[in-house]
Length: 461
Ligand code: FAD
Image (cartoon, rainbow, N blue to C red):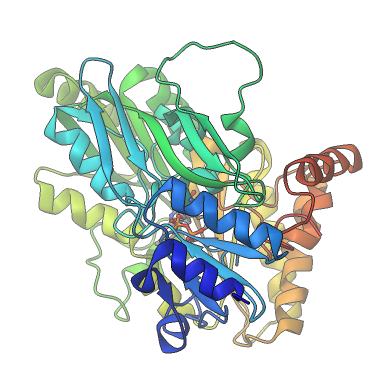
């Protein structure tokens, strides 16, 4: 009698199955580099193959975890020894680019960066952007509803997807490859899969929405004297730069000081004694006009004492130097290791109080070892908080989580702004979702995946 593995090898071929060392050398945790423990990695080359793989797994009641580029940061891709991994890495083709309709049809395993580059080739852009662009995949971006640095202008991944195709746990292919901006014919089924972290279906293809390429890019790093000034600066930039404001990233002093310290390779572009810093970016159509408007906004900010200093990038190298301070997460992780990472959102009006309260609590509990670094997408109400107490144990993690999420619940914030829930935040879901919401999520899971085979235990318990 054929075993399931024989059956799967027949479907995807010998090259489509990875075992042993080839499995273990994949890390399922971007921070700790923990090895993959799955029994095998199955690599289909087409939707048809994946559909057959899932039909066979369904018949055998075999649980499956989907892998994209493995840059997710909430343990969503963790697989146990009794689980199989389905990797989309061989499904990485850009199938069609429509310059007139401003759409691109891709397989889910293509990286974000390749999509961005392909859009640029036809003088358009794919506006989703984040530090892991070279490795993360469109399927992973869809599954986590990724955000990134340009949400303030273009929205999250959900806003970039016109259509998609997914394979359900029993192998059924649901094709919603819509290419139109408007389509109200019944339920918008693609939304089920966007942000559901591989628990409802495996995304195989997508129709992406492209935007006009903006030839002019202005970037500045500014020093900001207070949180109040930071929020007023955001308001000023939003108003004065109107539709061209594409990023507004805030860095607390603890982040900037660490990233420009001797321990890292980044230049201290501005003096390191300011309480806050911001990276402001615009994307526009007219270089001369945009530069003028940007400089005028900075001047106004100086006059109103919202900033104390500023550096306007005048070359792509300078621009990259500014963004590296924000995007070089690897250096940050290395400097704080062992650390715990958080991605929360809350109303801007409560942000300063929340951070100050949390910092006080950490200092009180871990006076010697506690260290916290804060940065994030201020315009989206989204903060990334990295905390170390110099102890990686699960007990310490739990204690830190209680502080971060416990304090957050007072302000009705969200335990996950853009990274998803995965395994890491599952037990805290009820702090951000009502019992009725969670019950409905469970009913949807049961309807689409009655045997509970897709990404078991992630998001929902
Ligand atoms: P993976 O890590 O492989 O998977 C992530 C989850 O999606 C898992 O649950 C997996 O099972 C599921 N999944 C993957 N592919 C599919 C598929 N085809 N169908 C169904 N389920 C699937 N996120 C942000 O939102 N904003 C940021 O600014 C940001 N910056 C980052 C910077 C760095 C340096 C890093 C390492 C990560 C960052 N992230 C950010 C995290 C973000 O979630 C991922 O980078 C990305 O969206 C995940 O894509 P991936 O292909 O690596 O997915």
